[in-house]
Length: 369
Image 1 (spheres, rainbow, N blue to C red):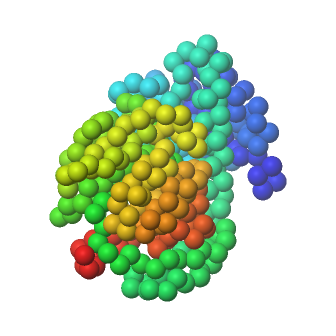
Image 2 (image 1 turned 90 degrees about the vertical axis):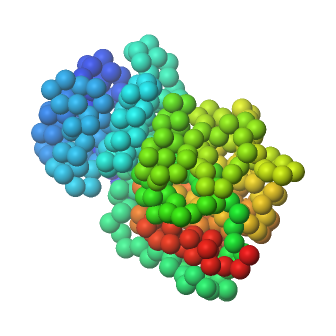
C-alpha cells in the first residue's frame, strides 16, 4: 500500500452510471479509495473541503457548474489537490483539456463514450489507475526536502550530487552548438512545454522535435497551442517533411515520429510500428533515429512524465556524443521520465523548468561551432 494508506480520490461526473463504473474500476485496485462522488462542480467544491481528497477526477461537461469553471475553484479550496480531467475524445473537449492543463490540471484521460465501452475498456481503466497513482505519489512526496542539481554551465568534470531517489552523476556540458533540439514529455507535459518554449523560441532558429504522449486530435491541437503561445510555426510532423530551422514538429497521436537522413536535408519519418514502453508516439524511437544522424549536435530535453520512456533513446544519444538535459523533481508533476535519465547518469544538467531555456540558449548561441 502507498505509505500505509490508499490514495484518496473524488469522482465528479453528472452521470450516475459513469460515476458508479468509475468508482468500481478505481476501487478494484486496493491502493485507491474513492472518498466521495459529485454530480457537478458545485457539489464537488463542498465535498473537497469536507473530505480528505488527494485526487479529483473531473468531468468537463456538467450542468450547474462545469469542469473548467470548477477547476480553479477546487485548486483554491484545497491547496495541493491534484486534478485529472476526464473527457470524451472530441475536438472541443481536447481543446478544453489542454486549456485545463495550462490552468493547473495535472493531467487528463479520454473516457469512453458509452457505459458498454467503459465496461470493456481495460486500457482506459489501466491508464486512469496509473495516472492517479503517479500524480498522487508525486503529490505526497512534494513536501519532502529536495536538492535539485544546479551544476555550473561551464563544468567540464561530472559532479556527483544527491537528489531523491538516488545519486545523479552529471556528464560534461555540451561543447558544440546543437543543430536540433528533441523534447520528450508526458504527464504534466503540455504546460511545461508552453513554459519552456515561450522562453526558448525568442529569436531561436533551431528546429525542435517533440514527442508528447497524447492520442490523435490532442497532438494537432497541442501544436496549435504551442504555435500561438510561442509565435513560431508548429504542427504535427508529416511523413517526408523536411526538417527546417525555426520550426517545431510534434509527433502525431498513434504514430511514432522518427528522422530519416537526407542528402540535402533530413526529413520526418512517421511509422506505425508497435507501441514502445506502452506508448505510441514514444520518445525512444525518435531519439534512437536521431542519434546516428546528428551525433554530438543533438540536444535532448526530458520533461515531466510517467515511466521511463526516453531513457534508452537517451543512452543512444549520449553514446553518439549528444547531450541530455532533464527537468528537476521539484518542478515536475511526475519525476518519472526525467528521473529515469537523470539517475542513469545520462544528463549534462538537471534543472528547474524555468532554468532550462536559458541553459539551452547559452549552449546554442555561445558555444563553439
